[in-house]
Length: 334
Length: 160
Ligand code: FES
Ligand code: FES
Image (tube, rainbow over all chains, first blue to last red; front, side, top):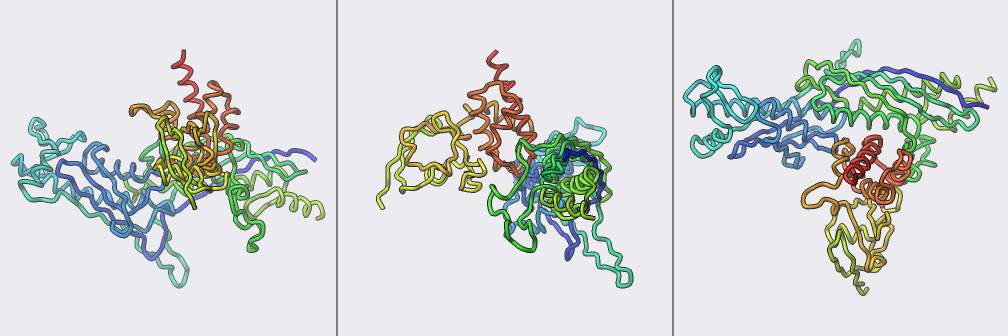
């Protein structure tokens, strides 16, 4: 009886969004009378940072500082349609919709500015600080604040835009079954090191080293925090979490936080995160969806590490001490 | 049923309420007094989201009857900032990106505050131990542990 050490590796690719009956998200953008911009969505921010990212995307597209943008994710009854915040689709789908809406709003903003400055709209550019300048003659400029006032009170224009992003449904070809379930994939690779006690079946994850390829990280710190949390969650899926430990039987399923297990602050593996940025072709400013993807590669990596440590293949999750011991017993009797 | 009067201080301010016997402190704080910083994650003492400080001790407000708090001094996370300046723990949680959905955050900060009040310069193990009654779904804990260690360091710098 001994503590055995093992190392496992796994690599995954992971779709951004889903191939449902078509996968749409819509967005609306409009300016307030003082030249702030409202993004209206019904995509939900549940802590992953949707509001911050949509503010950045809108600000970048219109050419204003991020703090000039307010994101309203108010209500799925009244907001523009969104399929929802799931399947790592939020940034990709809503971000593209926001870009389209912000471009249209920017065009109206430039048209109003052009009338004020008596030039062509195509001769104007934004400075990213809240001003619109004549290209090559930056001394001729107008603030976006004044442009918005003019639009609202003088020229009767609505500085606004509509955005729609749709990944159309892909149907499988009848003959081959071939289809295009997603247009955009994120990737990851994890190496995990574990110790397995072959007497008790207990597993300790010593280290997880993850490389994530996530398109462009639109907000690097928020990406990092999601990846760190996701890596922990992957370990949790691999070793702890289930509502039906004897599926399909419901017996012994956890019904509260005492019984539904997750690793606590004392059970953390030493975790390393490396981000690779390869901008995606159809993502907003190159982004992909890292959300769900980042909690996946740890699972096969840990299963492989367990095999490396004690020579048994556990193909049912979570990899509990009981499953290890049963597998070791079966192995011994073979 | 007759209502019971209860009086305590909440973040230094006098509070008086009439409550039904058996009302939890969590319910009294959130739904009667309107301090929603303590969160109800499980209502059975297993998640720590409802943690508050009562007379210097970390307590689960979901398992504390409000009527037992007469005369107590209660601190919640909403009472930590002073004149718009965040408490060092709040600052450290922000800087360390130690919060995502934020549901666990007030409870984590309460647990960390009691730790630092008693142990200003804790080891990592002491931080882990202090947070072990609080669960978090989002962060993977490491950013939270780092935030508490950072707050401890900034406290000792301020004291020095
Ligand atoms: S709500 Fe009190 S411990 Fe969960
Ligand atoms: S930040 Fe979501 S539960 Fe901790």
